[in-house]
Length: 344
Image 1 (spheres, rainbow, N blue to C red):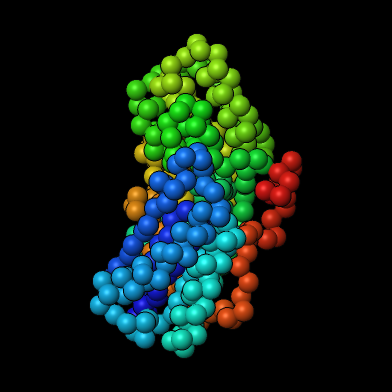
Image 2 (cartoon, helix red, strand yellow; image 1 turned 60 degrees about the vertical axis):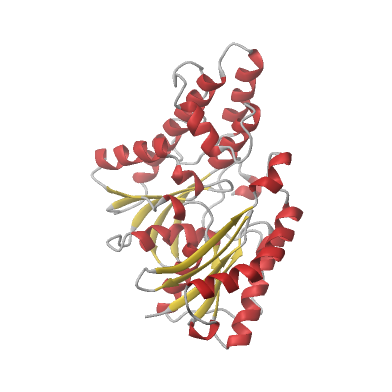
C-alpha cells in the first residue's frame, strides 16, 4: 500500500492531502481565497500566488500531523504541475520538489485535469476504464474518453469560454458575488427556466464542441433590458446550459466507442441540477453514472494525491527539473477545434 502527499495550487485554493492507494484519505485541508478575490469579481493571479506561498508550508505540517505520519512515511510527493495560473502552480511544484529532494522520495508532477479525470475512481472503487468523462470547471469544458491512466482521447472542447466561467460571469451580471456558480444555482431554484429566451450555442451541431460566450452576452442583454427578474434569468441560463451539455454529449457518445459509464468531474460537477440531468441522460443511453462527492469536485489535493497513487502503482515518477506548465492538454494529439484559437 502506498501513501502519497498531494499538493494543489493551480488557481485560488491552497490544498494539501494524504491519500493511501486503498482509497483512504488520511487527512486533507483546503484554504479558500474567496474573501481576497471577492472585491475584484474574479481571481487575481498575483494575489493567489502570494496566498499559496504564505499558507502552503503550515498546511503541509498540519496535514502530516493530522495523519499522524512523517514525511519519511510517504512513498511519494505529488503536486499539480499545470495547467493553471503559473505563479500558483510554481509555488506548489517547487514546494513538492523540495520535499521530494529532502526526503529522497519520488516526485509526481500531476496534470490538474488528470486529477479531476481520475477523482471519481477515488470515491468509486467499482469504476473501471474506459468511461466517458464530462470535465466541467471554471477553466475547462471537455468531453473525453478515459481509457486508462495517462490515456485520454479528447472528443470535444470549448471554442471560447468554459461553463464554470459562464456561471461566474452570469453571477457578476446579476450582482450575486463571487464565486458565482453556487449563487446562480441557488437563485435559479426561485425562477422560471422558460421565462427568458436565451440561445443554445452550437445546438444540433455535428461536432460535439461547446460555446458559451454568446450565452453570456445574451444574459447581459436580458439583464440590461429590465424585462426579467434575476431569478428568471438565472433559471433560464441554467436550463440553456444543461440543454447544451446534453446535446453535445449525445453527439460525442456516437464517437466515443464503448463506455459503460458516464462520469462528470470538475467544479461545475457540484451543481445538482446538472448532475440530475446527466444521470437521466446516462440512464436513457444504458450507461451507469458516476460523480465524485462534492468535496472532490472543486479543486482539492486529494485528487492530486490519488492521481499520484495511480501513477506510482504503474511505476511512474518525474524528474526534479520538471517545468511548470500554464497549458497542458490531456490529449496533445487532439485536432484543434475550429475557431477555438489557443483554447483548442
